Amino acid sequence: MAYGEKVIDHYEHPRNVGVMDTKSSDVGTGMVGAPACGDVMRLQIQVNDVGIIEDAKFKTYGCGSAIASSSLLTEWVKGKTLEEAQEIKNTEIAEELALPPVKVHCSVLAEDAIRAAISDYQSKQEA
Amino acid sequence: MLDLSKNYFELFGMSVGYVIDIKKVRQRYRDLQRVVHPDRYVNATDYEQRLAIQGAAYINEAFDTIKDPLRRAQYLLLLHGLDFDPDTETTTDTGFLMEQLELREELSEIPLQADPLRAASAFMDRVSSMYNRLISSMAIDFEMPDEKQLQVAREKVRKMQFLKKLHTEAETVEGRLEEEML
Image (cartoon, rainbow over all chains, first blue to last red):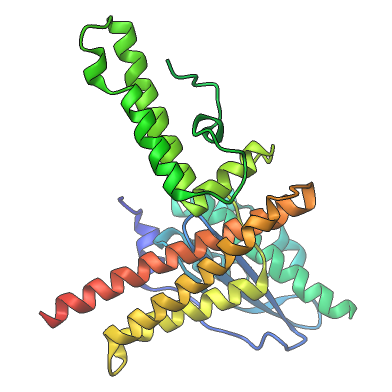
């Protein structure tokens, strides 16, 4: 299948690959997987005390579109508030990367991952 | 002629359940194939010939579904009224996904090992035994399939999908290693 330019760029030069300390109280971790394609995505955010995402990291095993979706998303969420990050829709990711219809579910995975990361962070603050 | 409104288990004369007798399934498959064999329809009408072809396709599909532990489980979930699309399912079981990430990392490092072929084969054995453990526990879920038990089975199906994919990728790694050694 032919990938779009932006997908290839993110795939070949993924931004923000890495891992943060899952146990740290200012880190939120979101993990999601798509069984049919075997994709596993881990997305982490580091949030400062005024609720702004200062840093984001990801690790994704999967196809080019899944990697590009998570790479792009980590770029987007940096500097955003949790509320703003929550608002990001998978359709925006799919549009930016020009994902073909069969690969749109990869962007859904990325949206699920950021939501999971935010909710993990929030549950840590309540604890 | 075949009754295409029967579900796969009925077609194979079995009760709807996860445990199967593979010998009986194979035997029944051969019997059914004989019924729709093209040789029997040489002098039949076009319509009858078409029906026979359709029947053969249905029998094949049923056989492939019943004999495969993963597809059999997916089909049973559908028969029990769970409305889901296996292709767009997602899972958020963190513990399991963490393990999957680690296994992927391990797989990517296999080519760097002293004896990579042995490592690849040991890795696949581990993945297979994880897969088989899920298969053997699945039988219980379909014995008394209430809503809760069906959701348990559905989560196992997701895990089996991951492991199957992982095994395929390990096979690819092994194939590449073997080629390099030639």
